[in-house]
Image (cartoon, rainbow, N blue to C red):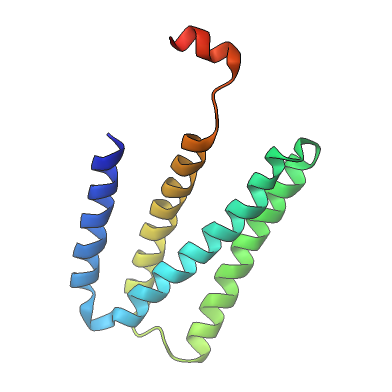
Length: 123
């Protein structure tokens, strides 16, 4: 099940990259900014598993980090005239923000052990 989802994400990514070949800078900027934003949010928000008393604050801080990375990335890209097609960038960013979030959270789910009370009911 997990492998089919990964293959589907890979197929959609390659197809979208091929379709956006004329505006490759915009496509790759959408990919990189979305990946950096989700990664920054993930690193901060999941520190709450080590510090549960700060969970709400770390989630808000992670959201602010995601927003900051996005705004700074788009601002620098626009100021350097790297975004050649705003619609390709927006669609690429939207797709990759969802895809990278899925990958991060499925990774986190796979490394998190199930609670002991759940193990007996799952067996």
